[in-house]
Image 1 (cartoon, one colour):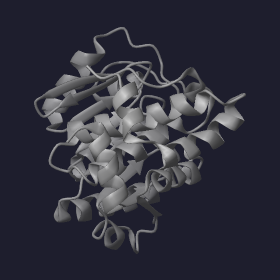
Image 2: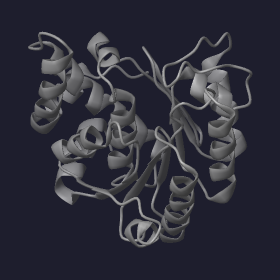
Image 3: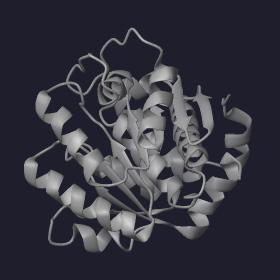
Image 4: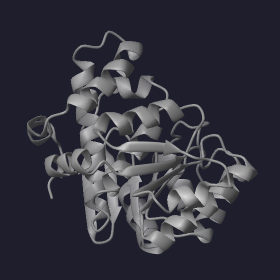
Length: 262
């Protein structure tokens, strides 16, 4: 299916996308999923995380506001999603910033099957074992071949790897794409990286058999909506509000006309 068709599938099937995510950006992640036409749920308690994951179409994990207890809930949810066959997306938010985050990402990757690992350049490089540092949750400098890093990590973990940035890289499972959509205002709004993971999870929920294509569709639709929002925005605040509106009204013809994928 092409990107516009997958957008239609999201609106028709309204997948339930379960999140254990960043408290800073949790509303925006939920609203973006809702704007695309899917159904978000944010269930973090260990007492119900597995039960919720077992009825969801996809699971999105985000370590932005990480605690040890939160990690245990993530493991329970991921194993339940694995048992159901629902795709699991991990946003390695802040990997490379502290040893604790690095340890917890490694533990999560070993505890369950992660189908899509998403992060900025330094986050993914760190998960792949490179000696880099992340500036809090902002990308640090990576003097290496990002496409090569993504491909090697995808092969090692038998998963799809997404590196977001000015140009997004999607690699794994026999595919490699570059997405060149988006707008500079995205870098001035807290949470657009987290929202990208939610968009990927939303599209993975309707395209579990082709996760590279699902990741591309999620990124394209999110970033085309951002380009449309930027046309009328006067700054980061109005851009954020308009982003949800443009995601909700996004037309397949806009996706087909504006997508930049190679």
